[in-house]
Length: 314
Image (cartoon, rainbow, N blue to C red; front, side):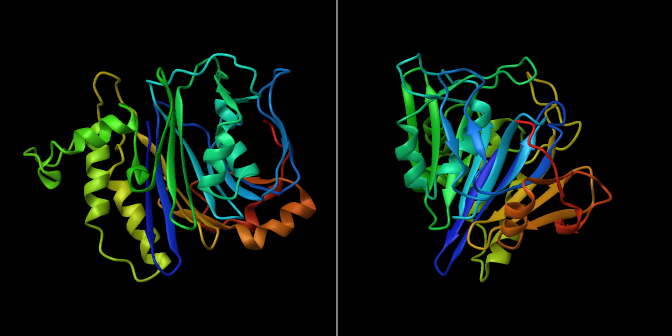
């Protein structure tokens, strides 16, 4: 079901962290992608076609979608589940599949403002993943600290910017999450901090712990603090989530939007791995897309020695 937070401070600190929660593993693969990759939004003829402008470090799911990533301009993008999604009807705009939405942003945009502006020229459509439709919203942030959450709802697209977009989970849509926040004691209400694993409880905890995070002195401290916050929003294996059953957290990530460092930690491994995009960009240009299994419990540390050239499957 997933959670994502953003931390921005003066002096070049801008980080984003997230969890991926699902009923089964999304079989993640970490990629370093060069600029110049030819892409298409869907298998259909009416899709948008583009050539990537930016290199990126991304994590794919099931070898058919980009879950999230960061590009060489310092833009981060993340897909999260949103059951209230209602994709727009055909209106003549070129289409981008929901599975390619985050990759489209990373390939073609350098900032949140550019994503928001460019989004108005496309129509996002459902492309089933392994036969299952995925209602999704897109969260983006950049190295300036700007952030946005784009939701396609029955009443049309809704875009939240700035402070409102620092935290996002799942249902209900973000405006309802922000309104609900006022029911809790820390935000003017009388309810205590919730401890459940449902999206509303995770959202409240995320905002609360983010608002109380000690001021980081460095980007490394901000990244560590952000990972700590999303751990408090995560779902342990076996934790029931009514009425859905168990949707555990399979992995946690953190990205430094200024330095281009991407950190991945599988919850089935005691070790984290990381990729440094600036040092890997030239290699990807020379060799083509590079990939490795970031959830391999035998892997730890810098992934550069573990990356190999792999044909893109999507």
